[in-house]
Length: 138
Length: 304
Image 1 (tube, rainbow over the protein chains, first blue to last red):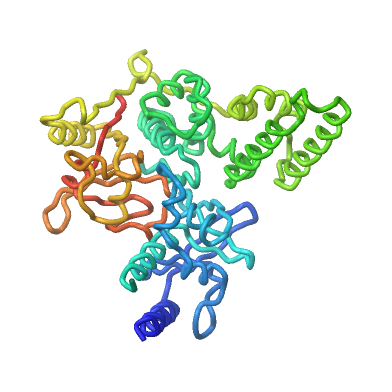
Image 2: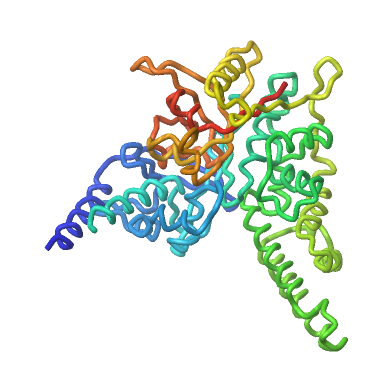
């Protein structure tokens, strides 16, 4: 019962993510400029192409948020590399790519088989959030 | 500092080289160098430093060792190196080259146990794999010929290989670091463990003097990076052993927040995203309470 309730809460949480409005951010990659949907309050920067016309986000990058774990990723490394890159490669099975913002800043993203991408900072945030939820369920 | 963009070290363990590059570029741009397109390559700086120190890896280093290297050899262009190999994803290319060199080194190719015919066959296969990798990586120009790669592989020298390809790439894309009154730029550092009774005061005074200077320069810090994601217990002082991830970043500003607390602006090298941090953040730069940050710092490094 407790597990069922937790699962429902997770679903409600992730469904709620899709309903909040976001701003656009653009980053330059090898293959050209890609537009992202950035939601400050949700701590989420995701490929614009993941945004549905109605309902929930739908793409591999969005699904990866549910798998992300900061604790698991950091167990595999020592030192101070970008934890988002570790979550991307070792937990979600994505590939890290670097983009350049319009201001010239670098930022790393996690790219998935369907071409969708999520910012590695978002993976850190949701990785930590998922870890806390797992601890509470125990 | 506004002219120096925020960088992302990705999966490389060279935060120290990123901090050194930020110190150098902030200095260049505030001392008459207006070539804002030229940013110092942390990867090249880390490789050069490790070669000089006769290290086998680039994954550990100190800001105070890297800065003098850049000052003496010049600053190699981050973007030129990136564009030559694979635009902004060149770190992936480097990782791929590493794995091929490892495969070659650990193969039968250089062992006496196999016959010359076997070695020739194996060699052809490995070279073919490597060629295929370089083609698929979209490297337009092979920086060093395959034969040279094989030669480097025999010397257990991934670093020498990287040094060779970066040396080629940096030939026409390096700039000199400006001198001050005819003297070379120097770096100083202060370690908390050398001042057990008053390290917090020394850190605070040093930071405040550096950040309010007319030609205000960033200050590099070695600290516990966990504090960026969560405001847990302090990791230095009596509880020093709790620090899991020693990291290097630069402090680029200070302010008094709405609650009247002094805060420092920490510029990290994890890109311009703010999504993963506990604190208020602007383009990958994080406002951290000054006292809390100082409690978690082990060392400061700054240009003299």
